[in-house]
Length: 269
Image 1 (cartoon, helix red, strand yellow):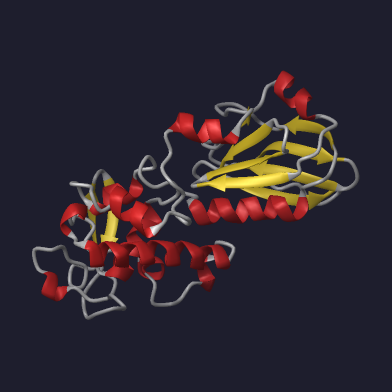
Image 2: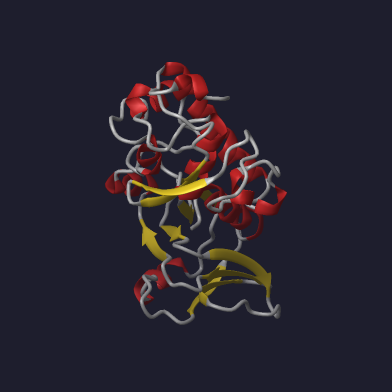
């Protein structure tokens, strides 16, 4: 499922190829079981230009100073494609913004879990959703106060979009793997040093994926993403990757080097 890095890659793609172009029309593809702008909402955008982008967590916004904005949520498998007129149309295109000239923005979503809507104010939208700080920009003190004070499993805290916007199952597991913290450890028991280490792992993990334009094959070979399988060999110790359910989500970790405060001597940085 797309998380913050995938959303950032889509935002950057829009910023590079679709800004400052006049919208000529907006075409809908197959729209069953999806939330897409209705005719009135689409007409508001005709003749205007998209001039800026913004991302908060997994949420993408594109619009102008005076609005309105398009909020794009990629869902389970959505993506943004920028193409020239006449290029082969990708499969599963649900919405196309046609700009004057040759440029087209396609919202592709084979599983139909994504959606697009017109919003008036980005900050108000974020507040109404109750989203926490963006996971890539949150400061040390705010991270410690939000995640470090959680009495439940640290993995569940990282996944709470109300605490920290943008981290999903994949990169939560990666950050915990890199920081040597067991996904079931109580966040409030970790101590300030390990919370700081976790924060560093979260931000460095997300930034590294962003830097590859969310291309997983470019990530370091010793990352968990490349051996996310029950029984795989751990690259940080002699342990074995184990799968279990934490907070209702499937989690992959190495029980040998990922520990909680019950046995801190085993932890490895």
